[in-house]
Length: 307
Ligand SMILES: [Fe+2]
Image (cartoon, rainbow, N blue to C red; front, side):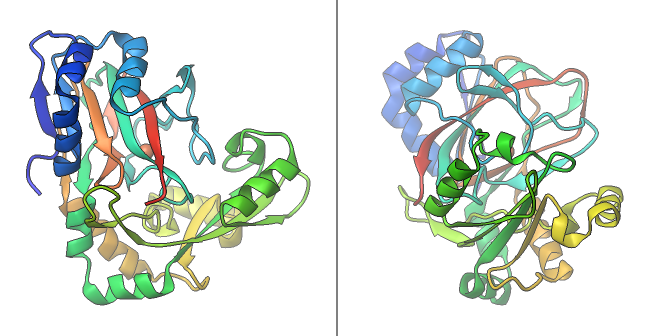
């Protein structure tokens, strides 16, 4: 899968004019390549990003069933995950643990980092093909389970994750979305959901590896954080962890193999100011390198999909 992302150079032209002229070709390029980088265009800041999302995808989505802290910049434009700069964020497909996810993601570089801080991409078609057949077949048979713990002390409070203070609303949302709830006390909620590990892309029909089984597995955490968390709360209370769909553990060496497949497929580029990266969330994973310097990336999501 070469050419991820496809780069389209603007030479200072308005991105909105370009979208108006070339929208069908841009959409086609996005599903062919999995990601398109608009470079050297006049985007028009965060308001221009919001407009570009509407022109290419339709209205940007609210960030629901959260797993990471983000701040709202304006409307449905958010900061990229507020997470310590020295930490890598491993490859993932946004919200692939949900019943419904955004099909298209937008990353807009307001201010580039000093060093690193790229959004590396991996083709989920390439990842799917490179996974050991037996390992893949086992996941496809057993599926995978995400277990999440919400609390005020660790991870996210449930009210923040679900954008409500009302427990009945959380219960209703979870029932609608195939999520089992277990209220441990007033402030602590544990949820479980069983999801498919792979899907057919809704436009191309390509089989893609699309799940958070690797990202949220405890072995993917940096060692110091992993050991600290396990000592503090024990495995069953981890903010996030993954299992096979029947609740049995996924062996560490299986997750290590999956990590190596994502890494082998990974490509990167250095951000420049005003870069607009558009990602097909089912065809490409995204990650975040550690970085130094300021790095301000605005993020928007669009096109709810459930394949
Ligand atoms: Fe993400």
